[in-house]
Every structure is written in C-alpha cells, then in structure tokens.
Image (cartoon, rainbow, N blue to C red; front, side, top):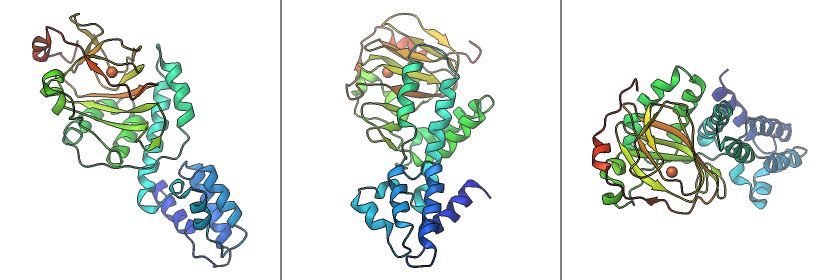
Length: 297
Ligand SMILES: [Fe+2]
C-alpha cells in the first residue's frame, strides 16, 4: 500500500462515526499514525488520547476549544502537507551534505522548524514554474533524485510568487517577469515561522538578477548550474557550479547571472526577513544582461 493509500485508510479511522463501539480508540490510533507522519501536532494527539476512552466524545469540540483545528489533517490537504513535510526533510538532508559558512546556523534554525505541522497553501498557477521547473529538476534528478522528486511533488501545493512590486527600471524587466519563489518555512508559509524564511527560488535561463543587498543573512544553495555571481558592484563575474553554496553576510552586495539552465535554489534568510532589499546601481548591467554563460564553464 502506498503512503497516500495508507493515509486515506487512516483518515477514515480518524473520522470514524461518533458513538460507534471502539471508535475512540480507532481515532486515537489514526491520530498516532498522522502524528508520526508530522501531519498532526502533539497537542492534537493529546486531544485524541483524552477522547479515546469515550466513543461518543467528539475530539473536534476539544480541538476547537484548544485552537488546534488547523493541526490535524483534512482529506483534501493531507497529500499536500505530506509532500511539503518530505521536501523540508529532503532539504535538510541535502544541506547536511554541504560545507561552508552559514550552513551550521541555517541547519540549527531548520532543526527548530522542521518538525512543525505544515499546511499546504497552494497559490495560483505560475508561468515561470510551469515553464522552467521541470527542466531545472531534470538536471537535479541524476545526482539528487530524492530531493528532485520531493520538489516535484510539493510544487503544486506551494504558493509561487512572481514579485511584481519592484521598480522595473531598477530591477530590470527580465528579472521581474522571469522569476518565482515559494516559501516553505516563513511568516506566510506552510510552516509558520517568525523571522526565519526558507524556500525555493527559480529564475529563467540567462536572466540577470542585478546587484542588491539586504540586512538578512542569506544562504543560497543552488541546485542547478553553472551560474555567474559577484559580490561587489562592477566586479567581474565568478562562475560557480551547482551545489556550491553561497552565504551572504548582512548587507553584502550580490548579483546572480543565470546560466543556460534555469536557476533553482534553496534559499534561507536566518533573521531580519522583513527588512527590504536594496538594488545597488552598477554601470555594466547591459553587458551582463547580454552575456551567455556556457554549460561547460
Ligand atoms: Fe539576496
């Protein structure tokens, strides 16, 4: 039986008819199943335990009284929540295999958030995701099949945003129309976190994400490559391969020139997530926008 089929079966037990003999214990056993899966919180499990002794007692009423209704699975969203949970676990596993500054801080933060119960928050269809996510995952699959499959499974349950409130003159029309991001952990994300943000970031091939900086310390873990980078206005580009993490201390200028493959990365902001980014004027954006990085660089 697949996980999804098992979840469906357990969901029938979780919602067993009130008053049916043995239903209190069946509900509690199903709650333990979903708790192990990370889809039902410890607080909600305690409610099912309390109600397990009396088959006619509705756990829903006590969940509501304790403000826990959002911490149990509902049929329509259990698949999405499970997919997001898996992706966060895969992301943590992937980050554990990387070396570099910031990674210890990032993983320490993630250890705090990764066991919270996610809520799937699908958003509207996104053109950039529809066009570029599959090719990006195509190149990730060979080396990291688990992470690639987890991203593919979770992507439809995420709220992908192409941020359109920048000044297009400043950020560039290519970037404005050529990127999408989705938070996994964050203030409006499936795992609600305060002042911490982790998600996926996707940019179309060849797009220039111009020089900018922000207060938040930031990790980029690029899952595709090569792409061009620089960490100071008007400096030359450095070409970095996939899986070479980039850590930006507060206010470090950074620019990304996407290579021939779409840019897909895990990003993490470890604090000061509500401080806005600032674009830094440079004289060479037109040349960088015209640059074409080769796949073999
Ligand atoms: Fe940044």
